[in-house]
Length: 277
Image (cartoon, rainbow, N blue to C red; front, side, top):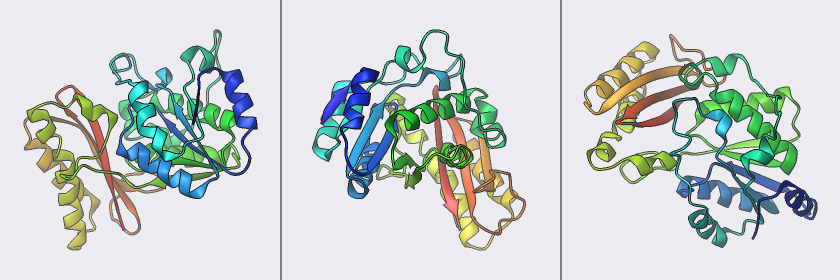
């Protein structure tokens, strides 16, 4: 496994790879969810590139960029046994050099859900992911289902900009009690950790209604809101039952639907989702 910081050195190392390449882009502080993406990439591609970059442009002015957990030594120790070929840890100065002014924006899909709560977020995501695709030239890129809207937006960008690659979206990895793995779970302490299960419980309750035949999306949204409001440590930002592809809120569920929500537990913002149908 070769770990690289500089862009020129990375380009040389990338050119030396032969065969198919799988890319796993991350912001570091890796957990089992990230490792599951790396294992799948290793199983499907001859070479695996992992990028670790806390992307400043996807954080808003009052978000947790400065506090975002970072531990490169820990990350590299977790990755070492997995057979990753290249780990690239670019700097912000290389990704966004002085005078930088070029952005990639996906329009309608980014106005909803996470985009409504975090207006500049997706422009930062799509720009950095487009740059990573351009620099790593992967055959497949691997993302987690936990960031469901992000996966939908990136697929749209790949189609629109004719990137010659496949986007693979892999299942959410959870703790034994159902909490979706996230680097931000590090912030959860004491009673907040238990309270964080409200996201999973809300999604489960809505899924049970669906399993028993409920197809009115508003009934599922109301059930999720009811459960979140009952947890005094939780502050709801949104709940959604939307079309999987357009992310438009549904009235009646006829095909695949995305149940999703964003909730603050104390100062920690968490997201989660289930797919129906």
